[in-house]
Image 1 (tube, helix red, strand yellow):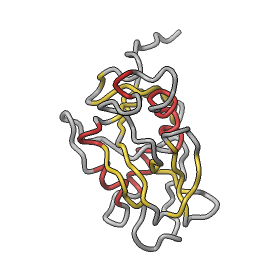
Image 2 (cartoon, one colour; image 1 turned 45 degrees about the vertical axis):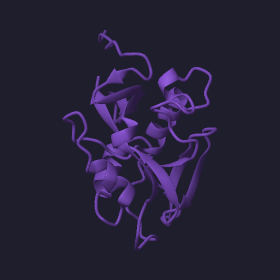
Image 3 (tube, rainbow, N blue to C red; image 1 turned 30 degrees about the vertical axis):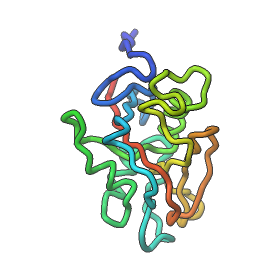
Image 4 (cartoon, rainbow, N blue to C red; image 1 turned 90 degrees about the vertical axis):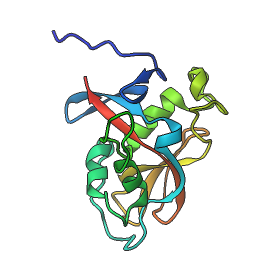
Length: 174
């Protein structure tokens, strides 16, 4: 039986940011790390600037690192912002997938009952109570991508020309 790695509490400093949960991608377990707000968050970015109806292939619901590598160019400001970061010596930041972003909201959503103090509404590391881009393109209509509302946790698709928030993440294999 494999020994389970001990992980910190949600919102604890970890891996250059803050621990925000676990995710399994392709059978491998990862810890999710949310970037510090001051360095790793930017509001009002578009998903894509031109050829918005062209599929990017970034349809993975759980692998934001894969998706972000596909769309890491000047035509994709949200992903490029995340991929360009170097925080606490780490340069493997990415735009979270739809599932990664939902796991983060469940652990650190600013209006959730058990959210750590540092991430509660109005606190230093709190997410804005707005929509955040995921790296997951909507598979059935490539003009759209998934986003998550950090006020109440809704998921929805919107046009890639919309302006949403972005918060970078990274993963550590556990």
